[in-house]
Image 1: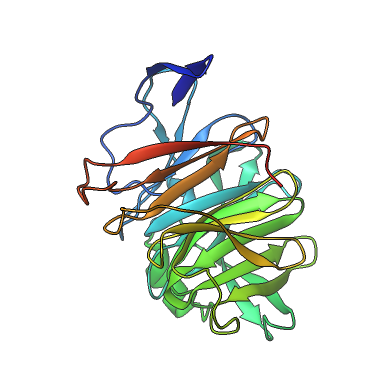
Image 2: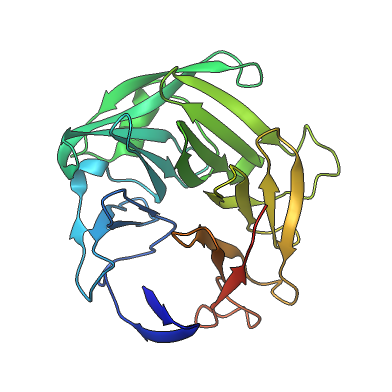
Length: 275
């Protein structure tokens, strides 16, 4: 957590430690941060970003290679991606909103063609066993390399890097739509889809892991355009795009910076106004 006063960093502190392979995660409407561990035994930790502290593990959200999580405050559910070639898309329903200690974990089963609009049903899995093993037995749908996940205005957006796709799931109708596939858009600037966020105008910002290290945006009418490009970061990837609460600043990081080293990460700020 970075604190700024008049464009100067005032301080920084740790809100989680003693975890492994932390990845995208996501914010909650009640002000906490969910940190996701990306390995086969990965779990989700809920953290307080307002002070130096140690997060609380949330085993009910499942054990698998977690990438990102998005919270739907209307339907009162969480959606989670799994970063594996045989990954799945998960939904968690808390027993007592917004407490995440107990609840029901389910995996998506897709019927129909996402290009024209498919339907999702949900198969319950046990959080006490590795979710990936149960998913294989449930005839649930494979999502190749689940990455970023973000909720906005009644829709859950998520990406799959293995096939360079961007998806939109609407909980109110159980409809799943494929809104981007680089095989369907020859010459598109967007490849290596990864973390995502949404601006106040409804533009979906998609960061690249690979490609030419750009953040591209997908407008509500499905126009794809580059927003920015990192030069000199060829051994890195763009991570964690996020807007400030007032929507006037965009933050993102280069995971390994210009050196390609795990200790060489750089965080950037982009000042609006945005589209």
